[in-house]
Image 1 (spheres, protein in one colour):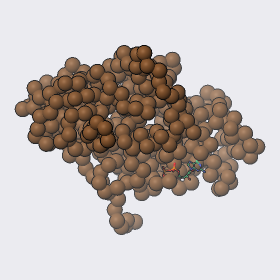
Image 2: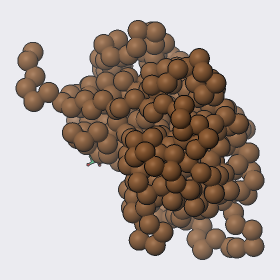
Image 3: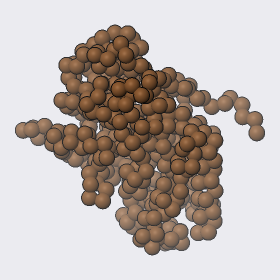
Image 4: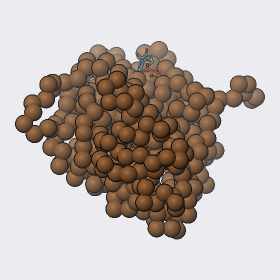
Length: 400
Ligand code: GDP
């Protein structure tokens, strides 16, 4: 399986990155085996992988194999997809989240750089313990969820449900999911963040068969549950996937319902940052101001065999550039940024600067660890770090 690479000039990528309305930072969360990997592959194959065009150089390849890409995301913690929605281009930064809930907080670290989470739920199994754990973690980090009810094919082929029963099953899963939001969301967001299928905040489909729809999409096209059952019974699932590709349902949902970074930071910063939000720095963070002082939250450190240690993180304020003098708050040390990169396409590509609201890879900040806060040296005496991330683990024994 291969993923298309979409080349764009660096200036065009930078101009998109400077316009938060065209940027989304999201990732996928799921209970084990509910289909996170299959769903992500489907998104990668459907959308293009954005890659900067280096002037005068022909790209070595037009496609990258899924396997190669998986290896790459393990290294990079992030890839960027290019997606056009209603005629407008978007950069969708897809943050890699670990495939299992662990005790070391990797999921939480990924959540810090995301504003939205695609939660995948198996239609037969429904909401499970790890669904609850990941939703709770997302709520702690003020990451807005959207829901993908996967494996609808199993309701038809294994459980032999009729169209009405399928609809009832979906309603039941949505209800269980919204109960989690009710339990764990910030009181101000409980109602706003509950997912409403009629508003396109829930997709249903089969990642295995690569089809998916939201209710508004189905209504617009006149698609009914009986048509979906028919597609399986009369063997035209491929046509269903052609007409209703999963990636389109999910990426539409992300563009529409995951807030752009500047909007998300207004409510996320008061919860995840320890400083005074009324200070000039606080205001720059709330607005994701690209002209404010530089503040970066590091989500992952990787060792590159050639370059050395690479930090991946989100720029919450300011614009980071090669040569910038920065201060690592936790490590209490000053460093100079040697290079700024984007993880796009199969390579890490040097980019002159990365503005607030985007994800960057940095060379030169060797003492940083996941969870580090990197700030411009000029504000090192006034800057506050991000909150420590809370590691929520699953209960060992569940008492009913
Ligand atoms: P993850 O653990 O959440 O990453 O789940 P995977 O994507 O690896 O999927 C787990 C298993 O479910 C694999 O055997 C997939 O082939 C299967 N699977 C994924 N999506 C679907 C689907 O839509 N329908 C069915 N029947 N199986 C699926």
